[in-house]
Length: 485
Image (tube, rainbow, N blue to C red; front, side):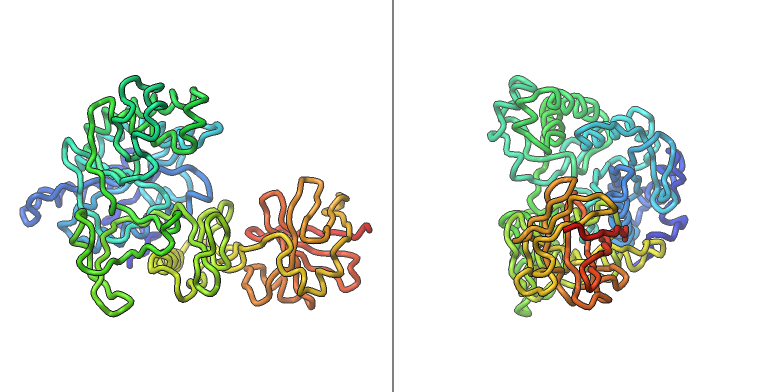
């Protein structure tokens, strides 16, 4: 696979300005579109919406790496064309990755609902003339937590966009709310969102501003916000499309959402014949029994965590697994390279996604070294391991200072009292690579964990229990404590 960090004429090289970022990747695509060796080719331009955070930066780099890989696999007649990362920040001020991924920067909207930046950035992209500079006639709107499973053809037409079927976007379920926002459209929206979406440029031009306006109208309606929650921007898009009479090709197998409720055991590859009318041409792969299987999906959407016991059983809904692959673990730090593979018995999608992350991080030369944990060690629940730990039994019931501030108490049973609110404590499991530079491995009795305020800390005590050192997982911040009682 090509290294995503290597800018080349074939991939285009963005410098954070609109002209370079959008036209460099489109030139090759436009030439190929007219190639008589590729009759009927309808290339599309991938538009990746992103915010200027560490959390979305590492996701964007993984996404772009696999985009480049799959575009090469598609060959000269493939329909995966140019690429633009649409980044919200300060307009025309590129970030550190603008030379790695062709990038356009527009202004970010700040406030309590960050997803408003998707329609806001699209409106700025369209109305700022950037869309006009794209040679392709179709746009694929992608998200940072998308990984391309295989080359994706253009599934849209000039009048019918192609989108994923979201079960929670059922029109009848929110008909009353939709009628509050746009009278008469209740029950008439498609069960789709604005990503993943393949759409003709002219349709996107028409939908962009109403999409933003309907989202803003939802945000101003307390009842609508309560009913629609985090996906209010998706409903803004669905209402905007319905208001313009746009109907979608709704595809069940456009993307795979492993980890969602009821989805732990769903396989990426299905036994033949593949039971889907959507994309029966998916590639053949060997099944567990040795019989041919077919993989119908194009995109892996890792919005849900993949959680397993070390015995390979699903950990359970809403709980962190003994083996855990979840993007939310890496809000402030990159995932480390070479993370531990899933246990035997985990789904094939789990193994595929972990390998996709490892492949990208291993091949991007500028992927930073990370102090964040890998896939084992995230399950840290109140009182975990206390009963079998001599250290925990000695620490239970004691009171300490944290960075000179009194009020830290290791209460029996695993409750942690701190000046900043409640937390949990327990015995850190041994034999786990915490990416802590040997911090716990050098402790004779092992470490305890003390987690509060959204941060995970491993704590190493002196033998006489008068002082401790702590190591914050993710960034290695060290804080010392002294015993008070």
